[in-house]
Image 1: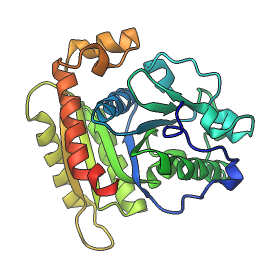
Image 2: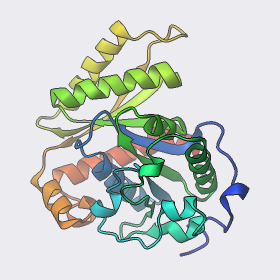
Image 3: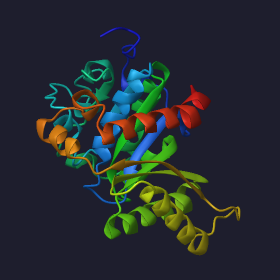
Image 4: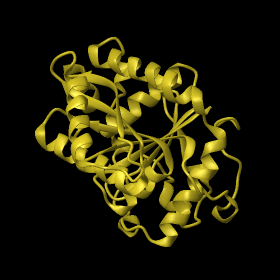
Length: 278
């Protein structure tokens, strides 16, 4: 792996500590599981890499990680090895066929399911070590509002909340956004609506969520939190095919409706967020 894509060798104690949200770190999260959050993270990374960005996706779901499954990877070294001092950070970074890099956590890291001081410090050090070497770091967080998920999101300058039109997903998305506003004082939260049936569905859903927020969530500053609809990803049989084959949709069928939507999402993200932080 080239030096451009790999952070220099260091121990965790030498890495810069992340004390505030980093401008190039984007958290991809959701209120509930099963809405396609990891699928979006991986394929969005591929789309951004195709546009010339140096991208890394970090699997920040320590207990139920599945980024390796989506990408058909079997890592020999994971974040667990870095956290425990058995390996250096650069040894755990894998370059994917999609043109971006990944940092996998490995499933079943039960000891990291709670936000202890050790987990907090290790996580922050990792982010601090990655940021200087990439244009974009995507955090594929766990679902919900556990303390580990919320801490991961707190390290990002922007939050992308993935939801589907299903009522349970929207209810949990609202609950997540409400917590982000209350605990992290988020003034802007960005939405991606997956598995939409019709053009315009996602924008209408985001508008409905905004109305509920305006009515029931009051910030300390008195300013309303703004939801920004980033795009829809339509229902598309190619998505299921790619997932079952453990391939990136952006490689297998980039011209399908869902692939084109993800490409458009990458362009919008580049124009409205990334160029302001790189």
